[in-house]
Length: 128
Image (cartoon, rainbow, N blue to C red):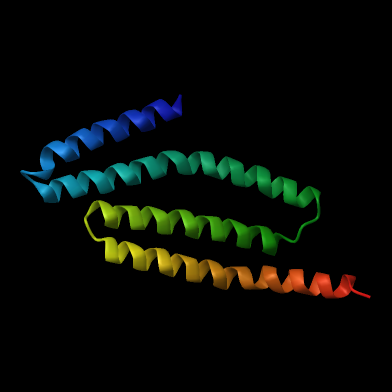
């Protein structure tokens, strides 16, 4: 199963980073970053199949693809900003991690505006 590979990789990388942190901290950070990238690559293939299913479902119920693609972008921004922030925290840069999270939240808010406007228009049309 895929999760055992990911957990095994994570545990091995964690042991390596803990052992190397005192002697070679720069290699410890590199191991952490590379491990995160490998796990992300392993998961992206699974994520694409989920996106394809959701895309087919949205076509069946006649939802405008602009809204679905916007939601996918929002989820992507959330995952990528969290991933980047965690890498910064692993490197001991909590302040930069907070800025990445803040930027991700702002970008999500900007992307959500068209969906909110469509929702408000729908509410206005339903009112007598």
